[in-house]
Each structure stands twice: as structure tokens, then as C-alpha cells.
Length: 294
Image: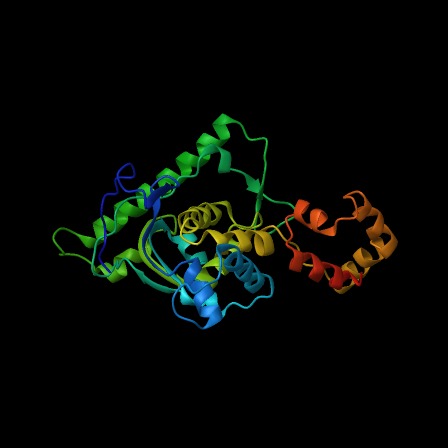
């Protein structure tokens, strides 16, 4: 793929800048919340169901991991990102991808230089993470200068190997001297189910900061297209927690029928009001009680 173009972020709302030279652009999509509902009901047209019924159905599908209807929708992005970030994105093998070709085209001299806030020392508790450090201005500026020197020297060697007017080394070999901090571009497409799976993993606080920035930008572009699906995704995937068997037993022991009755009394013995206060529908509240044996 040979693709390089200047993006006017003020004029094109489908593109957003990310990091120092990168961007995310939503270039195409297929489907909507209604398409998810139609696929789930195996019907054609909007039918006679109300919007609230559609919302509850989408939430039911997400809650019980009935994911096939979400696969009927697709999103397609144009992304410019550092190569080391791209390598994390391509681990999601259910997506389709086509990358800028460094065999056909000459790479630009754009490289990722982290801002001061992201220049941190190696974590002592997480082998694949970073943590806050007491480094001051001079130390962090020194890190930036080291990045810049390394990138400058590598690109200078790359250009020297290429020679003038294709007189030197083949591009497919010359590119080998460039570091993974260089920027590349690609098209990336996935169905909604697999996109949300990627977003959940890559927006997680444990993911590397740089990939979180790209995943968050992608999600922000998708959310207005599938508001109910994304709302359910946030409730049941992003902001929920999984419990082990032992943890589940502890929770059940903490909430006895007697304690539940006392809690309901605080809402005038109205379980529906209790559930509503917690953002749970009638069916969700019933399922919650069943999980706890109440």
C-alpha cells in the first residue's frame, strides 16, 4: 500500500491526532445499533419494537456474551502510528490490515519522541511497564536528545544506502536499519465484536500508554455510531470485574437474604427502585439475585 497524505484535523472530524505525528481516522463503517437488533431477531426492517426494547436486547446480548449479532457491523480505520505500537495492534488477528509499503516507497523521517510526562523509568514490579521517576528536566531532555540522535543517525544511514534516484541498495533491504520508533500507516478493519475486544484490552490501564492513546481515539470515533452497544460494552466489559470461584463465594457470604431485605427497606421495599439506582433494569436485577442465590 502506498499512502501518505496530509490531514486537516479542523476540517475532517473523522480524523483525530494522536501522539506527536500520528492520527486515527474512521474512513468507513457498516451497520448500527438497529442492525445488531435485527440480526438478533433474524428479522427485516425496524419492526414494531420500541427503542427501549432494542436497548434492553443489546444489553442482554452483551451481558450474556451472545456476540454474533455484533459481528454484523464493521468499522474501518486509517491509522498512522509508530511501528512498535502497530505491532501490538496486529496481535488482534481477527482484523484485516494493509500497511504502507516500504518496499515500494521511501519512508519519511518521522519518529516518535515521548513527551516529558511519558519519560519514566522501568517499573520494579512490572517487567513490561514503567513507573514514575524523580528525573528532572535535564534527565528527561537528555532522553529526548538520545532518541533524536539515534533516529537522525539511522535515517541518515537509510538515505545513504538508498542513494540518489534508486541508484543504491534496494528499499526492501535498506529499511532494515530503521528503528521501531518510526511511523507507518495502515488501513485496519474489524467487525464490531472484535473491535470491542481489542478496545477492552488496549484501553486497559495495564496496557502501554501509547497503544491506549490510539485505542481510545478509535473507540471515541466508533461510540457515536453504536451508542447502545458501546454503553453496554462499558457496563459489562470495561467497568465490570470478573470473580474467581473463591471470590464469588465470599461475595455470596457477605450478602445474605436478611442483609438484602434491609437494603431493599432503604428503598421503601421497592426492589425496582434499588435496581434503577444501580443502573440495573428489572431483568438484570433478577439475574443478579439469582447469581447470589437470593
